Image (cartoon, rainbow, N blue to C red; front, side, top):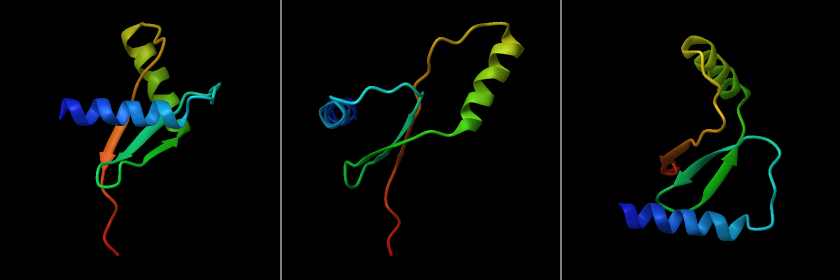
Amino acid sequence: MLNFILNLKIYFLLNVKHKFYLVQHDHLILTDTGEVIEFCDPRLHTIKQNIEEIFDVKIDSHSLYFYGKKNKS
């Protein structure tokens, strides 16, 4: 499993090597195709703010990866 995750990270880095993100984004990794889909959902920012308030902390960054497979047609 670790090899699989490392390979996906290498795949991701190769495919976005010239992109610079100003907005926090997260990832959906399709384990059947190896495709990495980037997305941004403002609800995650709200969750981050709630965690900061509840636990009296300042979150500097986060990492979120969803793993899944394409649905069969």
